[in-house]
Length: 455
Image 1 (cartoon, rainbow, N blue to C red):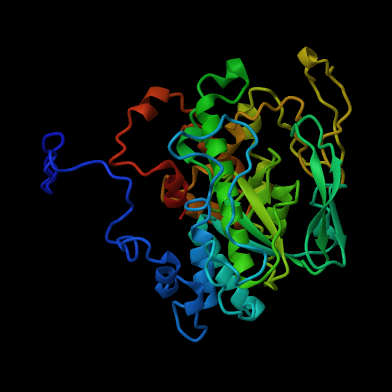
Image 2 (cartoon, helix red, strand yellow):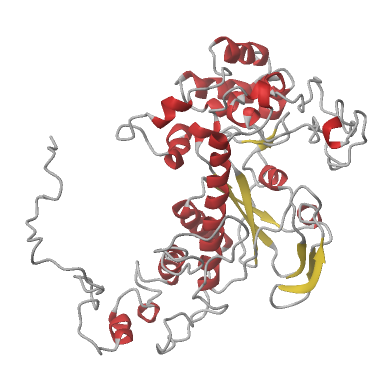
């Protein structure tokens, strides 16, 4: 029912001879149209988005409502790490998000503005806090939310030597630097976290599902390729944005918050009930399978209710499946039926990098009974993520019935795995041109794709 018009002729009338360029921001928004030198901060004081209007007894104006707003504007209005007119800086490490919010609520404001009234930090039960955090995190882009209580087990998931704990008021950096090794390519500053940060908010971060599965002839290259790598990159970008907004949300509420300091996010997700761990060494979640990017962990002193691990029969299913191992172009995934405590050496090595076959395993962590991935061979191509049996999500209504069956019995596991191969779910998508030529008006965007399929 929508018709096209000629270029430069919208439905609103424009006199192009009369219209001139302008540097003014004046428009219909409250305060933008007032003539100078009207004190802009007074308009801001009148605005209902000003935290001084907060009323804990008035729905829509409570502290959590303002926390949601102040967190939402992060990176959108206050990221000065690049010039929007000239474009982003060259690729590489950047200092992002010139954050306007200070460490203590409620001294938020624009330069020269009066400080807002002092208010106590948010208070509520752990159940109320969990519900609030879940709602906010989901709004900011987390697919699923879990919680952990920090104990000696959880601390073992953090970066060794770079994460320390002490009786202090605020997290701080010691100035020391620990090399992280070749894989991550940059050193880790040593940071100390208060012992009172006894909880972890675990957030599942998605990535585009369609580009992750377009791999071309990876059997020849054995590498990730630009299109599927773009899926990972966008997922990590989402992770950073989600982290910044959740940190701001907690800050406005008056609670401590950390960066993600754990190195084993798959294990954190398993403990918090986000995922199980599969043959390919990464997470398998009930809704998305392995088709998600990462579990973000934010340590805080806000009391929440821990969520328990789950058992959907997914790890057990891996014993008889092996689709990921069959597809892996680098033979990095074990084809053994049973998981093991042993840390096997690399089977083939990487002779081109001077790593011979049989080199001892120094990349797996002892203490986990699993199918240990030969990361000397892994090139990060995403076969195992995109084509895990559980990553097929809800392409067919039968899939939910199958998942329910797998959760309760192993009797049909081999049949289901063979059916995945038979029906072509493990046939790799090589249609690069099809993606570029897709009808974007009738297909969902990449970031929404996983959500629509998963639920």
